[in-house]
Length: 331
Ligand SMILES: Nc1nc2c(ncn2[C@@H]2O[C@H](COP(=O)(O)OP(=O)(O)O)[C@@H](O)[C@H]2O)c(=O)[nH]1
Ligand SMILES: [Mg+2]
Image 1: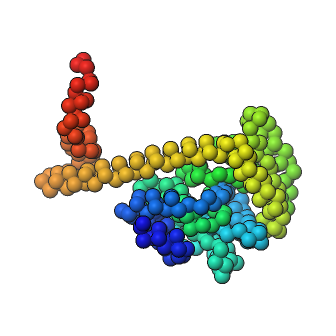
Image 2: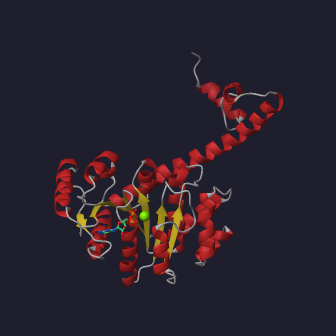
Image 3: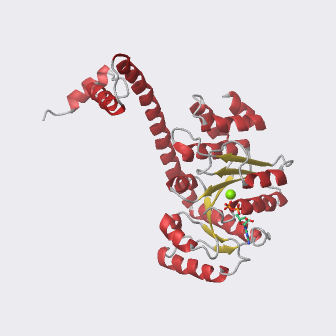
């Protein structure tokens, strides 16, 4: 077993932090480590919290931590902010959370910013969730700003995704635009202490009537005031009901299979790209040794060399080649 996996198995917090740094930095031992850790996973409940900047996600997550700790659940928070260059440290709302839960060993908070791996932030965030699962947290909250495709990708790993909207910001339009509709399992109207929560509630329900087919899971709409600490129990209950639904209907198993399939493809794509890049760089250095090319001519030359080499990234096996020749009919 990888030493860091061993450390995580023994619930060593430094090993945990280092493992997440490995996936962030695309450490060469990442695959071996992740493979060990996948076997160690304990079946944590993965909950995604997404929404526009300022919707109150961090405040809400902080409250959820309190709610879950009162129920003796250990909690890890992965705060993913693609707009932040910071990583591994405390950013914005995290400082408050860190201060509140600083001395609690059953709360772990980690931020991830743009400094991502080859597969991007989404890939490293998913890996980080697996690591936290292996460590043994009961609940993993994945908080991300719902602005682009990579955030939607991150949410794929969540079993339950809560979409946070607020009154008076035209959020319903946002929800329609971003394709967030498809990933929402629970709608949270945060800042329900402000005017406009009622009409917003109605709008979301009307939208659900339009979009959601009958028979499946209909996302409940929960009103919350994160600052006042109201509606937290209802929110958590809605999430747990969704998890129960996934398990009762077997759709959770199906979902996990689809996610795993996509994850494998992502990993292979990143690895293939990495290997290809190494070879490309080597070849490029050879070219630049003798020629002083501008970027475009250099790219053209490299692509030409690649074509000459048959466009392959793996060495050919002679017998495979022979088999392919036998099978391919002459045209
Ligand atoms: N009135 C009101 N303000 C809130 C509520 N929740 C968060 N806020 C405020 O909204 C602002 C953004 O909150 P934050 O948690 O940082 O949002 P995030 O960007 O989604 O993480 C802060 O000033 C919060 O105090 C709420 O329930 N009611
Ligand atoms: Mg925040």
